[in-house]
Amino acid sequence: MKFNPLPEVVYTPESMLRRPVQLSKLMWRDLLASRELAWRLLVRNISAQYRQSFLGIAWAFLPPILMAAGFTLAGEAKVIQVGPTDLPYPAYVMFSMTLWQTFVEALNGPVQAVITAKPMLARVNFPREAIILAKVGEVLFNFAIKLILIVALFLWFRIPVSWTVILAPVALIHLIMLGTFIGTLLSPLGVLYQDVSKALSMITGFWLFMTPVIYPVPTEGAFSVLVKLNPVTPLLVTTRELATTGVISDASGFWIVSVLTFMGLLLTWVAFRLAMPYVIERVSS
Figure 1 (cartoon, helix red, strand yellow):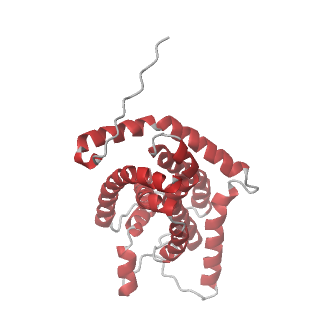
Figure 2 (figure 1 turned 60 degrees about the horizontal axis):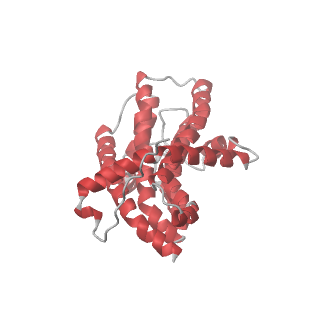
């Protein structure tokens, strides 16, 4: 029986940034090698997520439904005043909330995954990319479940669908990439300091109200400037518009944020690989 020889790995004190070509090859090799482990981690995480929950997949539906019910009742009681929306207001909030939840899961996923894998990181040498890939797969799986709610929503409110709906997954992937980029950037710090997880919970709560989830994009005032500077706004709004009206209101903003997100994700991947050995050494000492 023949055995494939293990790849030779040479550790030197020299920074890998001095050898970008070799670093790129190693990153690509580890990304390919991490696929099987990422799949096993994904299956394990999803099984654990729903096996240890009484309500199961209902948790995917409850937040947007409750959010829509609360704000619809508040609007009818004149407690809040929201401008006209492209969709019936309950459908608008539920659909937007589903997209927001997907972004937040992509943002929190890498931080929580690296913290959970901390004992394994200190004992086993494996491609660290597997942890991030498994979380991205988990986000996509959870969104696939939420699609049931979205389809039911469109049928109930008889929302017309444009042919551009087939492009909506592309914009959604850009939204997930933005969350993964920020989450991966923060994950090494999240292992060292618990403040990161706590701060993320607080910031995402505030961030939600800076994103046009429960209101249309404002056009006047200082608040509209803040909403438009929010990088989530063009990605979330474009995904919503592609799935419904088919009219893109801020195509340039969408592509600017998408290109910056892609570049940031590549740079963050490099930083993640370079930082993790030091982080693991710090937590295991």
